[in-house]
Image (cartoon, rainbow, N blue to C red; front, side, top):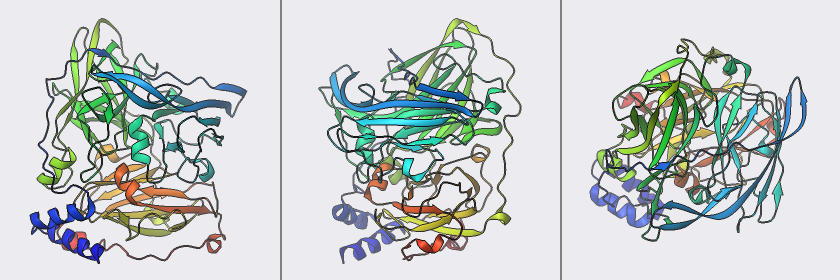
Length: 521
């Protein structure tokens, strides 16, 4: 009965009748609708004084080398630690092979990757390879939990284009907390096409990872978990690679920044304080067809972008997150931090810089997936921590997909708050957003995409050859609190003819995607 009333009140609040209704909903759900939050600005106020920490490259054991690729063995340990992030004092953190965050893993297309992941934490966790095409048994989701003192050893062959991927824990109901404590890192993939381009690629020199995460600290310097409000924890200090008030000393005319939104709830619109354009060359799944010049790049949790910045000798530039237009109300924008303006990083150029070649006019051709080739169209509605009316259930399979097929997924955020959508194991292409062609920055391969409220987003994807009738992949909102609360579903990829061997839960709700046109969106 409470759930029925809550749904009714949410609809009433979204329709504008709403302050009293939203206050009641907050008391029922604890999601903080009634909390008032004033937009923050740190523009021009950050004392950039700490050298940017750049995660080291993990050093794998190379077991063998062949024409097809190397066999790379990465030994990783999740552990507790202590980090001096702010002046007030040390904070307890988690990390991989260190006190906080983890090393950058790097491999090439064709390589056989083997992970030996040891859990030295006091509780069970997992390690998910976000954006990677790999067997479900190696995915590192909630079905591959590693108990304290145990070791997990997945392996797979890299079979996808050069890209900036990442890894993070994925325990059901605890993902936000485990990422917040510090376990995250990048996984860079290389291939021959990317290597043939005149792009910066010397790691730590002119090719630099930037992991953006917001955190809050108490008066003793301890990292604290804040209120979840509508979307999850928001911090008042933005860390870049775990560094507060960071400075990057630039030594080349052109620098490649691999930007990851590693936050649990906050989105960023990344640009430069002096108005210089951002040249974007890659999104989640790899290079775009051509460089795209933008004022700024918006990244919701889990999304990545590779950008190029050119600098003159001796100059400085501040990387800033500007307020975002997420299609939500002003009140919702205030509580979710999307009206904040936050300085992120100071880039400080040396007096002598390594020269840069001309900017490539073209990058890599995009294999466009054709709608006519899609044999199945599926609909997904995200609302009140549910997908198609259901909370996540580890024992339930929601969808069965046939290996090697192309499908269209129509995803619909019928909620008044921000959601995005991440699909494991595949990179997809965005066909339309609200019935319109996507902007150039969404023209490449994606694994996570923002869902503007009441704007259907149509995705097309080809599923790979890794199959299992028992071990599922996930699809979910990547605002981690939403995921933890149940906004997640499961699908299996099976060989042709094995579809009937899987017990699939019947759908409760089918999204009414036509309602977008009915309401003029």
